[in-house]
Every structure is written in C-alpha cells, then in structure tokens.
Length: 388
Image (cartoon, rainbow, N blue to C red; front, side, top):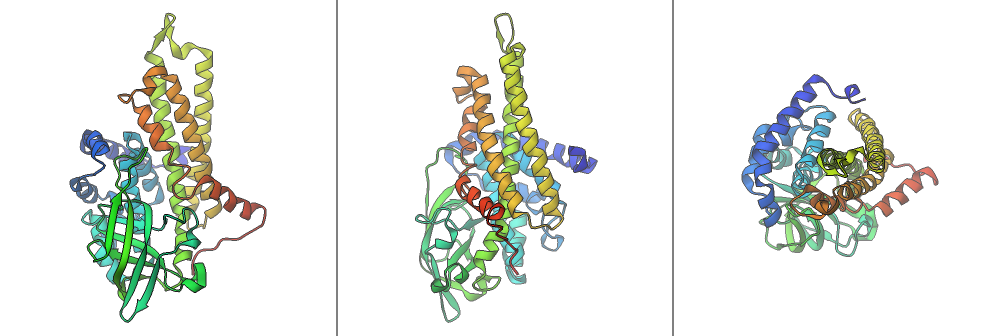
C-alpha cells in the first residue's frame, strides 16, 4: 500500500531525514525535555535543510514538494520520542505558516513567510482562549479598528511556541456584534508593547514552550490584517482539516514507533526459558495493535492524497484525528504493559510516549467536539465549504 504513495525519491528523503534527526536532534532531546526550551540553532538547521519549506512555494525559499514529503517529515519526527519537539516544529510549519501562505499579502509573505522557511523566525498560532477551549466562535479577544491600527485586547492559552516565537498569528473579533462573522486574523510581532506570555507546566510535550498570552491594548498596524476582515473564522475552519490530518498522521506514526520498540523488547526478554514473544497472549496483542495501526495509516494516506489533490476533506480529516489519536493512546498503553515494570521507568521510551500521546485527543479540537462535527455531517447533512 505504501508504494502507492511513496516513490524511490520519497524513501531517499526519509533516510536522509532519519540520519539528520539522529545526528542533529536526538543528542539534545533530553536537555530540551528538561528545560522546556528548544535552542535556536536547531531551527536554523531545519531551515537550512529546507524542512520548513517542504510544502511552500519556491518564490519564498520553499521546495513545493508533494504532500507525501510532509507525511514522511511528520512520521519521522514522531520516532525520536519527543512529542514536544515534534509539536514545536509542526506548529510553526503547518499552523502559523499556513496562514501566512494562504492569507498573507506579498509584503507579509516576504517579511514573515520567507524567514520562517529559512528558520530565522519562529511562529505560533493563537486561537484557543482560557474560557473558550474548543469553542472558537465564542472567543472574547477583540481587535477594534482605530485609524491605521487595530487595538488588540484579550488572552490566549495552550499556545505551542507561545513563549519563544518571534511572531504570533492571532484571531480576534473585529466586529464582536457579528459573532463568528466578525472575526479576523492578524500577524503580530512578539516585541510589540502590551504582549506578555507565561509558560505552562504540562504533563507531556515537555520540550515545547506552551504559553498563555495576554494582549493589553496592543497596537497592530492595519497592514498586518491577513485576508479579508471578518473572514477569520472561515480561514480557521478551512485550515483545521490540515491540522487534524497532521495529528492523525502523528498518531499512527508514534503508535508504530511504540510497537516497533515493544516487539524488539519482547523478542529479547526471556521468561520461563524462552523469549516472551512466543507466548500466545502477547503475540495476539501485537497482532491486534499492528492491525489497528495499519488501518489508520492506510486511511490517513488516502486522505493525504485527496488533500494534496485539492479536495476539501474536512470530514475525513476529522475522522482521521478522532480515530488515530484514540488508537495511539491504546496502543502505547498496551505496549507499555508488554514491558512490564520497565515500561514504567523513565529510562525506557514508553513512559514519555504515554504522556505525550495523551494530548492527541485534546489538542486541535477535542474528541468530543470532533464527534459532534462528524455527527452534523453524517446525521444533519451539514456541508462545510472552503473560505472564498
């Protein structure tokens, strides 16, 4: 099945990426997990290698490669056992930069997208609010027009790269009385007066800087509005399909990593005079996990192909995240069990994997919200359409 989507060039890219990650990233992971701060040098190395520009136009320094290079990049980032590092990379690349590419004008692209691809600037996407959670339409942050500026007030939370990024893609209501039809998107420089950020202490994703951000009468030049005023909600909804597929791919990849590790462990671990992978109960558990992973992986590849072909796959991407993140949590839980007491030890990878994976059914839309979105489409025949 993989050969339907991956060429020899794809596989060469995968091997090159694996080598890069092992040499340049893995030696630093434990330090970044402890400090919660990914040092700037690695961002620049990613930029120099072209990894931030895989999906972006050559005019801004990108490589404009097909979507399966992105899939490979996501999969391999999950297999170095730091969900936080992976999140920081893909949140910059596919949350912040997607809005720059799709809604930014030429000046914004030159000033923000080009240096983001080069690894010289780091971005974050600010949507979730302390009192809103998954209720994007209910956000309270406002950006009220005042001459040549918008005045931004409000707060955001659970923002990946929210502390150390150089710029913020911020959603706020420019016409609060219009509800979600009064929402707009801006790019805001980190050093503008009135912005403050607090790092949050998390169960997992320890390497990434997740922040709560406050905006106090922040003056945003009107030129920093992205796209049309009032269309912010439609832009956000449109890009959720990519974010959810990203999280679905992440999930099948980390589950595969966990199972590969567990298979190696049970092949080497001896009990009652033989390797424990000879015991039927464990063999059948592995068979079940391998089946679940393969089902999700093949589904995710199919949706990636359709997304790459320009289809609006909001329903299928939502299903991808819902199913794959639940699967990954269960597989990693069961793999930890295969290791027995060692699975509970920090020196083995399953403990961190278990913590990191748990964010899957929460971030990017909780599983509860995703089920309601799917229900609206399959029961109420609701149609979601791209922003125009």
